[in-house]
Image (spheres, helix red, strand yellow):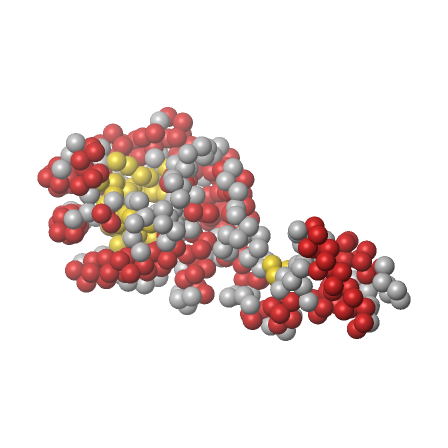
Length: 377
């Protein structure tokens, strides 16, 4: 029977590293794997062994490193790929079949070929792996009647999980929910996995929609790392499910800060300042109206306590700052000013920020405050 708790499968080391120009060393892969385990990830797609000897060697090192999570290899529907995967010692395999007309046509194949290959390939894999997942590549663009036939054939061979991939990210939350609602009704008790890409910016929302409509697992990457616009975001899905849907996926969000920054450094793909959950600006505030309320209750202008994601609320000095914020920051430094001085200092802060076209640093605020007549430390 399918699991009842949403299950996040991390594929940073496989699909994430497929992003053009991204190369992880073995040490980086081992550190990422360790940090993912610390964050509560229970399953990692550790790579594609058929890529070559170096990849196979690194995957074997990860598999033999003693991690508690399940290790999953990705393979094409070829005996060679399955044999190479078995050499790693991984306990799970995901075998990918193209299922859309556009993908099959590009390969010179058709749907009859897919159905004929299923039984011998699954049988071959069953002799080597305890757990077999079958991936329906480009399922979002596949003919639904054939997709149903494909799933039925997989289940007849006793596969453990079915991955439905939105390979080019064309689904939206409504069509994703409709897909998994229908699939879970037609195929009850099946472990359906959703694999979403972010080409239209909806990978997080689509993954949530899948999990709330019948899917029991999703695969995603740290920082959404991946080809084109990337994959679904592990950290965003875990946070969104917890905060927006009230469903805990078992991920320790506070550990995601260090993990996401390390992956950004190792991949040479910087995190955008406004990136949800881990961007520099996620708990940073300047507006005087907001800051005044935040001083009383952190949740007035944040969806979660900053400590839940391993951060602290930060008040920034700038053109939109209010006197309350300025006095609060000065009081933390034991710098006292009068009401009259507060009004003057607030205007000076706004003016200097406007001229410099940026936020102000604390030493600049102290300098302005020290130049006020009668200001005392």
